[in-house]
Image (cartoon, rainbow, N blue to C red; front, side, top):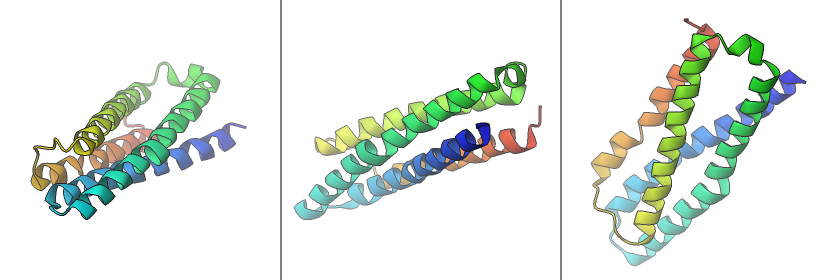
Length: 141
């Protein structure tokens, strides 16, 4: 059963990360847009991605991750790599929430950041993905 839970956990984690990569990219393009049609289109895309894909994927990643953790608690509780992963995941949930704040900022036409900010912001999830994968696969400590 645990292997099926891992498949579901990873499937939703991949989907969540795809959205974590794509939404800030939309912010880059949105921040450079000047015509009303493009701005309206980006607002719609951002809202649908955040509410329809990103948030449900994050929640399902969390549900299946907690389920796996509950079934393997004895193995994980004393593992430093596990607690480092939990810290990274908590950071990603904060990043996710910040993305939601930016979706609202753009929807209210209140963005003050440049496309350069969003280009850097867009790279944050890859750093955490690399850390999490290293922790889970290599288990360095």
